[in-house]
Length: 335
Ligand SMILES: NC(=O)C1=CN([C@@H]2O[C@H](COP(=O)(O)OP(=O)(O)OC[C@H]3O[C@@H](n4cnc5c(N)ncnc54)[C@H](OP(=O)(O)O)[C@@H]3O)[C@@H](O)[C@H]2O)C=CC1
Ligand SMILES: Cc1cn([C@H]2C[C@H](O)[C@@H](COP(=O)(O)OP(=O)(O)O[C@H]3O[C@@H](C)C(=O)[C@@H](O)[C@H]3O)O2)c(=O)[nH]c1=O
Image (tube, rainbow, N blue to C red; front, side, top):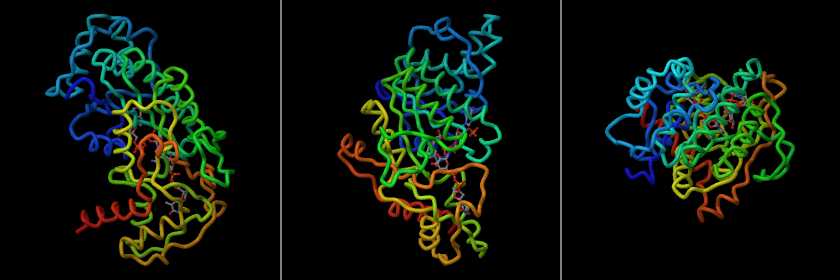
């Protein structure tokens, strides 16, 4: 690994993070403790990086990032004042970034429980907004390029056509509000950062919408699914590959990255069952008002990807093609 392409992936235990690690093909670093090693919800102390940032050392392939974090802890343990704050976790992450100066940090860590965020909006805000801001500060100080992930839920869903990057945002729920605040803070602190909005991610790892629907259908149970939410289903692996490409090119600004096409949740569920070889009619039509979920989601949040196409010169595969590849993986694992 050369310094020019060293990538630190945060949130590597999550749905997207694990796909990004895979897409990096051994070129990245992860902090193995994950949330235990750095908690984005914790406040960070001011000026910490400045006090402790040492001259940059080259990244050493053989050492895992958490070992390096441990040795940093020991080093700063001699400073009592530092010790008081270092347990907050986030300071240590900042220090790690300031010292190791990864070429790129891809932030896949975030608070993602859309319904629960309605009852703990402060925590969602702490992680998705303040935590992201602290990370941006560290990247700015270290000279690392930052790729930060945001969401289609920053929109209210009133559009009739796919949302472009510059369209007005108006999140409906606490999760979307926290993500929008994160976008704004990151862009202000580090205008050269890349903020990628994606949507409706499915893939191996944490069970999401597609997996939950399949689990029910595999038991032969009918599943009620909403027809009045239309969006851009996206395979974590396709997204991750594009993220790594964009990171290597140091693309900046705000960018929508999703698989091509659009679908309702209902259509997505039916196609998942069909591709799995199950009866799509197990999926029954429902409406948002029938489900009455704690969080209100946008009714229409399809993302326009023309800017992405211009930058990469490529088109993302369609969501149906992507879903087919994911279901093939699931079937392979089940066999
Ligand atoms: N899933 C989706 O459909 C979409 C997601 N996004 C965004 O993409 C990013 C990744 O999402 P996804 O992979 O689905 O999320 P997951 O919930 O699968 O993973 C989130 C990751 O963040 C970590 N994390 C959570 N809280 C904290 C914290 N306080 N401090 C440090 N780390 C924390 C988790 O750690 P642990 O493993 O310990 O839980 C996990 O590794 C998020 O920013 C999300 O908002 C955007 C659009 C769509
Ligand atoms: C599981 C299920 C959900 N639904 C509905 C509920 C809800 O309105 C919608 C989506 O539900 P979920 O809770 O599975 O998905 P949700 O957590 O809302 O997914 C979102 O996650 C965050 C992180 C994002 O950033 C978004 O892009 C989006 O992917 O589908 C059904 O109608 N039937 C079902 O069986």
